[in-house]
Amino acid sequence: MAKIVLVDDHTLLRNGLAGLIESLGHKILFEANHGKEFIQKLEHSRELPDMVLLDINMPEMDGYETANWIKKNKPAVAMLALSMYDNETAILRMLRNGASGYILKDAHPNELKMAIEAILNKGFYHSELISGKIIHALSRKEDDPGNLLKAHELTDKEHHFLQFACSELTYREIAEKMGVSPRTVDGYRDILFTKLNIKTRVGLAVYAIKSGIVQL
Image (cartoon, rainbow, N blue to C red; front, side, top):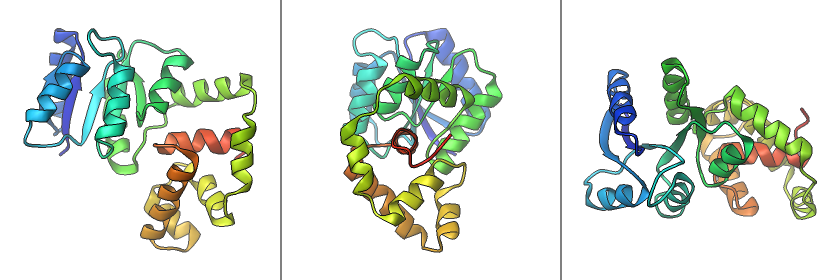
């Protein structure tokens, strides 16, 4: 059972979502109308949520700013963006701000269930929506020389790990494939997060594709 917080200014939608999440066996820690209210309630909460379901378009403090605050101040808290926006700009911006997944508000309840379970178990939810938008954005974006230079500074093990990080394997399964301990794989991940200034596994995948480490 995960402790989940809902941040969305649409009360009826939020209430329905709360009921659905509780029917999946999870606990709603609290709800908020926008980012500022979320931060206020979090400061008075005795428990830290495992995950925040976060809308983008909200008054006072929107989803982008809220996600960035969570990434900087509560990095252990996972984020799932839940929005009506299906454009690549919104998706990539939320991923850069620390979201571990992104689904649309009109998605089937089964997708919400899959997204929550994937983020809890693997640390990310890599849907067809995200894959398509990221690939399309990368195909139009010029290479960043700084990032490409950094790719040459990575070790062979880090390159190898990045290739597996773009798969559906869990970190434990990656460790088995590489013949190392899960702790060692966690070390590769954390070092790459620091080297590349990246916060999520999806971010690592984007970097690996952009730098040519993984070919699509």
